[in-house]
Image 1 (cartoon, rainbow, N blue to C red):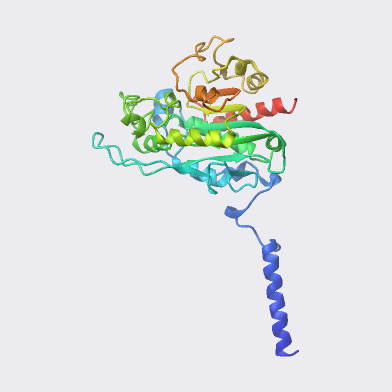
Image 2 (cartoon, one colour):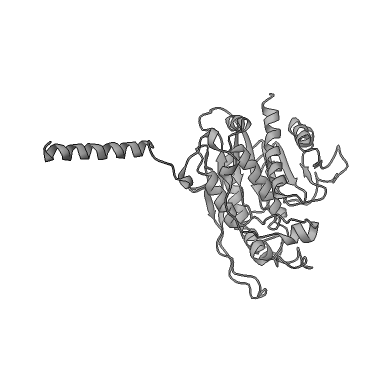
Length: 363
């Protein structure tokens, strides 16, 4: 065989290998780059490393839980969002860039009035949606939000549990993606959560000034404005840049209307869920949720627990979501889990999704 023929064969062989590599034949996918299909996405896909930082203020000191639940840090929000975002049925919302970023907070310099408080660098706000891109037609719109209160880490674990199920391989999750679109905002108070993770003395007793300074339930913007509760200012405009970004994104992403809305909060005893609307407490979804979670109380009439939930201070996120100025949500909800283990919190999120499946699958 001539040298020329050998060269041709070598080139042909090289091209064949290159084409096979592009097609994925004979190669092993890199774990960090894989795009799983329905049957490949099990619960292990959503696992990621996180620091063992514990929320002693909320979980151990307040509730006395023997095994504190890991705090949910901004880094964990970013890791989980990136992981979920690799799936082909997860895309940025209309307001987000291709990395599912809605924008950045302004950040805050070190406050000389609180020498123990660190500087807060700009934080990232995320928004993504989960739905079957091949299924057309009207879909049920579900909005999920967490971290309204900076130290209530348990709500973030509930949201993660719901997202993991909806984005997973269970046939009921596949059905939900065909019938619904889930708009996910995993960190609606990123500077508050950053300071909660970095400022709370994790080995100390609860701060006697909890709720009166910017360390606990708020964020620097609220503290500067003399506000104490991040869940009382959602009807404001032009006062808080993060809230303006989140509310504008939700309205644009959903087209100003949604069917279901979940605002995930921190642990309460007894664990409970609520809605400012009577219809949302007695509809088919509410009944399905009571079947899925019989140990979690429904607030307000027709029960006796927290009967005044329909009123309360204005500016709550659930009230904003239900309003015409907000998202015109038909069924707005707030979820307050108990002082549970991490696994039980993830299960709670799964049950919130399964209750929706119970309703949609029988229509």
